[in-house]
Length: 471
Image (tube, rainbow, N blue to C red; front, side, top):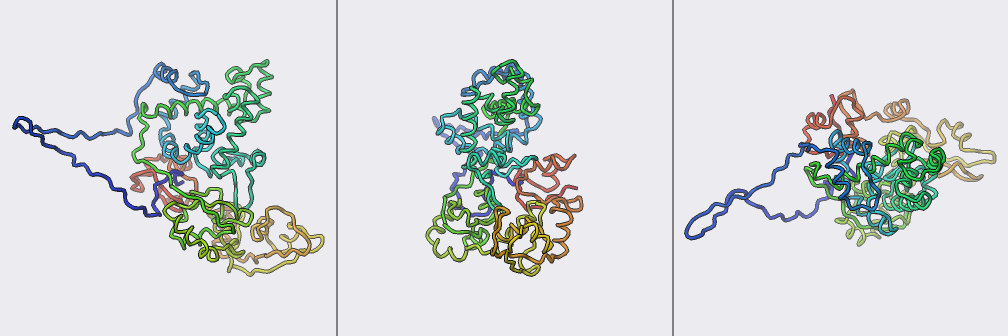
């Protein structure tokens, strides 16, 4: 999907004044003689892959200035080869994203007096994508499962997922890693425990006869964890020596500069974007924990990240904005429905105006499941329509229910379970979190370069909703 580090296209900034150089010749007179001095323009071959040997890598590793233990072996070397030769597109992708998240990681790690290089763990966890979701339900830059997230005050409801908030999740990850370091006494073991859980690391220690280092218990760890720590160390090396492997970005990427603004109310983000002239995709990029383009009452004190080019205007006119961007129950349903279609969720929520809205007063003995069955809908729909974070309801409570009469396209979405991003096998609709590399993996047989050629793309930049030719 779109790059988490993206060039701003929706907000027009004042143009930077760049001194133009005339590449050609400048004339200098010395002793009445004209000497032509030619200006040399640097030229990069971005696709060139330098050769390297194990001994060269070992020498660089010994010269690395890092607070992490790192002794090169064949396992780590194989991953270095993977990231610098076989999968350079992925490495370039995360290099583009680093300017957005590394300053935050570095500041938080310094605050907790931890090694700076731990920041590379987020690459292995999520590819620096704050909306990354694993097959088992882990979310965010640091891939927290719901239960572990709650231990560190990362809460989830229908509209907000704190695990996708870069600041909250980074602080939680750093605290968790520091507790694992205290538990096991070295960072490699702490990283292993972060991946497979402290219980599995303790079992590996026991099975190894009481050994206390990662490579001593390596054969007793889960298979995934045996690759996890070497991948981290390989990525740490790659970022230290990116230029030596010609991992140079063709186009520099700059993070979106922002200010934080509190509205102290529930917000309709689409309406805010429309009135202020902010690109809604920019708001979503800056606030990845907001799932449905709305800020619910439960998070009305949330400090919304606003592009800096618009923040002063919004602060100065916040009182005028207040009523216009106030979230209504009808807009809540509408925004959630639209988000569900884009996010490939299984539940489909009818929009306002499609079907009749009725009110139902909860009676003694009622439960959400019973009410849903009575009205031919689902518990998830009832919770979404009424902003419920749990299945708890009380006698006398009024619930709003929609008739569920949907048009043909909505019915198809219900039958299929989700919106299919592939249309007639010829086009692919870019989804949130996609990158060209991820799309190429979904479409077996197509490389990143082939996708770029078919779509006349000069860079790897794509955005949600964009249709790509794939056949």
